[in-house]
Amino acid sequence: MKEKIINSYTGLRDIIDNIGTVQTAWGLLCICALALTFVFCVFAFTNRINKSSKFQIQRFQKEGKYLPSVYVELNNSMECLRYFVFSYRWKRRIIRQYNQLFYGYEGKRLKKLFGSTVKCRLSYLTPFSKLNSTLHLMSNQLDDLRKEQDELYDKYGEVIWAIANSTYNYTYAIKYLQDLCAMISQKNVILVGSAGNGKTSLLCRMAEIAIANKVPCMLVNSRDIKEDCSDYIIKKLPISPKLRNKSSLYLRLISLVLFFQRKYFYIFVDAINENDREVFINSISTLLETLSKYKRIRVLLTCRREYFDTRYKTLFSTGQENPYIFNLQEAEYDERATMKMIRAYMEHFNVRGPFSLETQNKLKNSLFLTRIFFEVNSNRNECMLEFRNAEIYKLYFKKIASEHKEIDLNRIVNNIARYMFAEFQFDKMPIEE
View (tube, rainbow, N blue to C red):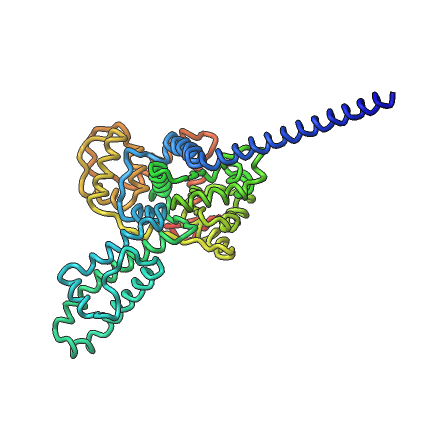
């Protein structure tokens, strides 16, 4: 009897041990499954992020905010932003452009004049910090050269006048290379510009370039954000909801993988001025601080100039992470590029007939007016020799009012006009009004 009791106890203990072993095995299996899921999320990150960005680009196309068929690079703004996307991998391009400045006749004279005070040729292996310091030193040397013409005349003779005049072009070139260096090293950038000068188109085009080069890029419409910006971005990450509380570890692993790939994860948020929700306004600047601890994450925002000056400039300046301000309004439009854009608009909106030189000049001076002009005159084939801006805007107001009958657009426009006449200020008005 005693022996049976001992055997029963031994059997029960074995069963309990086996159950414990099974539970441990299931636990290990679950941990392994979660680990494999985590690893899959990390390595499938780029494809899944870029897939959602493609969908957002399609949304912008349907809304008419991005028209790929009429997109034309009107100046070097897009080229500068490419340096932001490709980052330090494009350092060689800046060095090549710098070296080429001193290949020609004028460049050789400057090189001889400077002597050993500043390097006029850099190796492709030059560290980025050394490149920055060389550009800064060269910029100072060119400024001093223009300021000290009289003293240098006694030393070098009449040749100094020709060299001094040529330095204006070299000063511009060095300043441009310094801007490219700034775009390479910046972690956070804000594109600032007026209405209709192509901020959304630039953002979509940059996203397409990133996707084509297998660079992870998250394109976000600010209007879709109805909560804290950081929470919204975390929820947009392609990670299982069960692992979302490990998002910090996830992003650190993403940063590690991107480090070896020499790439960055880009977050593009379009038109932050179009979201008036208090939770958004209060959290957009803290988004930069939240993501600042991840070395391989960069953020690009777009904003209308008047909103940035009155609302966001102070907001971002008081934060710990001060973004780089890229002003689109300071860029000039190339003549041939604007004519190419006008022809693309004519093709897209099916507008035929020659334009007068006056009409062409008006369209070239305002991208916003160009877009409105072709929308209003869509599918028209008559010869349009000239037009009045006020008439075009009037037709556009009627078109918008007919599409959004729930809004009394005429009342809004009349109220704005009364304010402008009362204040005798016709180019702008305070946002709070």
